[in-house]
Image 1 (cartoon, rainbow, N blue to C red):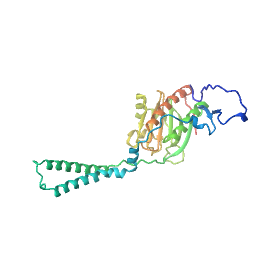
Image 2: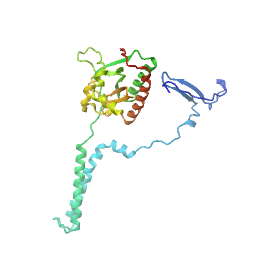
Image 3: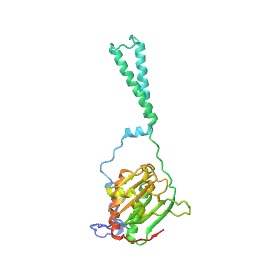
Image 4: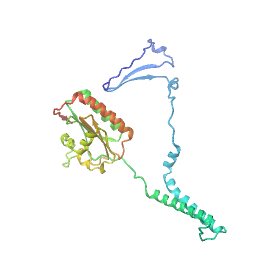
Length: 305
């Protein structure tokens, strides 16, 4: 089924004048959203809305995990306090009891004290390690580049609408800041932030589709046929194959579009794309492949800003 088409079957009740509607009579409203979806909505009065409220299972909160995340410093230092208290208790017990201060391997109390001292020192060292190793704070960066919007003018309106819908959806709900789609050896879309050439004339660096398709990133994705997620782009030497993206792009998803193209999605946060985002982008790639296969041919297409 193509995007923007839906079939809904509704049993239409006998028309009733507006003045005769009671507070408990649902009103059937058909609302049309452009280019992609038709939704059937039910409007109810406030008095009967609770009847149709969600009654399924509700997600449970992990209060322990929430407390730990909110008291990170306390949790990290707690082994030091526990270990220090245990060490002090063993020394006091040894000093105040009638046991000789020199450890005696033949004494069960001495063996218990040695074991307790070892555990106390281990706790202290664990706390020191926890304090020294902290996760690096990840922040959102502002793309260093210029905004552009280039779409193939030879594409029909339905294909252009779907491409723009993909961009709006990704930029609204993910960390996506750049989107490039190459299909049938042609760049059909370049939108969002792009790199600015060294001459600094305000124009965005265009996508060389042929050069991109010869690179190891493209060939690797097309060979595997699966999505490739570069969670920290700065660590990958293949970054040089994406010169059209802003220089400080943090993460990139390479999504194959069948065996004819690829979607390159640049983000502004390291590891900013979640597992749900990746799965959703995979389905979007399948839909784009189905649409573009109908309209994009192996002929030069003109790009228009």
